[in-house]
Length: 261
Length: 330
Image 1 (tube, rainbow over the protein chains, first blue to last red):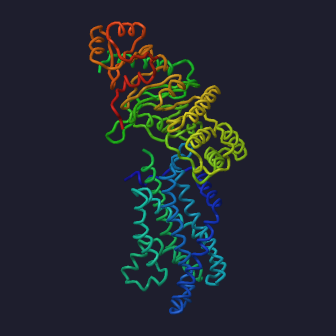
Image 2 (tube, one colour; image 1 turned 180 degrees about the vertical axis):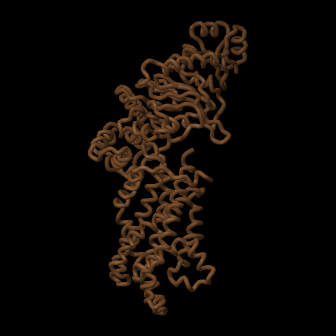
């Protein structure tokens, strides 16, 4: 157990792994650019305009403005989580890229750290593409909504690290479906995304706050986009920071355990 | 099956004393790899069982052995990606447990499995890989193009690696192993699954590299390849080194100059036994290792009524099968 929490040595070479993924992303930009755009539009039309015609306001906020930050938060979660589960697993297992990398001065810690940073970057890029769409529909306010970008990085890093833990212990690519259905989907529905957390039974509210990372991202994101800042943001940030640090450490150690034999 | 009794034990002591001589030699700079009592366990399985060897600068050193002998594990320990369980291991005088990045900066590795980056072209693979060694972009660009030419892939420069044939991929991997101008090349079955043309090209390139003073450590299942390339080699089995030496010396010492092969028959067998000639039976063939095939052939022809008979020079394969047996390994 002890080795799971030991601080992994990481060098600046992690940036090389991050850079490799960025180059591939840019090389295939056409594939990567449109999903966020389409994603944003789909949510806005289906939920905002569709369901929104029945639900005019939530807590005095137009429904579409209420869900706009949730759309961003869910994207932060999905893009980092997909990247560091399926993406990293494919690079690790099918492409053997990690093996090729650790034959160079890169250590396995550098490689995984680079992957995590890249997962977080994916979230930032995704949000960066969605923001103009949401601004165009004037469902989020400027300039405070620009803080969604640094938040995307922090939240992305958290979800990347959690995802990497699953990648480190999954027996095969098929079993990565479990965290998707049992962790990501419930979170997408019950984290104060499409309806306020306060509608949940009180016990569930506490569970959501304690165990569902997305709850905190949605809460902060909503403070930025409405905007409605409050000091509670510090609690949310502290929760995210703690979980991020813990899971970054655990995920790197788990991956080392899996790959270095 | 009948073997001549082999002074195996003495042989190993002899090897060890030679090895030690190099290690404690007056010029330690010339020792690239030194291993003593090197051991690797995977749980209860002993993969490498306390081996000792040393590789000098400029040498081509081979690891042979059946599957599961511990060759790849040894390669991975040298390549500083798999930590040893115990024993001494030094590469360039450094400990892989302590300074892996410093060692790996000067290594070129050709792994058994093809692990080129499918998201890049041939050039992209070399260029990106150069980045992992912190090679400046301009140098990397120039070097990548030179290497593509070296392995004769310049025409495939901008082709995605997925579209390459197996032989081209192996050549590209060899080129990739050279991006950092390594002082030591580690090749784990470099010509696995290649056609004769591609194998010969790889051999030629390895010879060129050796001529340039590179040190090369390789494993292979192709014994003709080992005989052709290696200055010295070890034959491993079940995690241990059985013998070490120059290919030709090993053949001479363990088998002899030549092999006489005769079709198996009751007459031949009893006749050989009657003349006190040691032999080995494999399938339908009787093999007699000898330093004088003429003599053996004469006895056979005169007394044993052989049906078919041929004489051939003894090879490393004969040594290999003699030492590691003919039982299949998985």
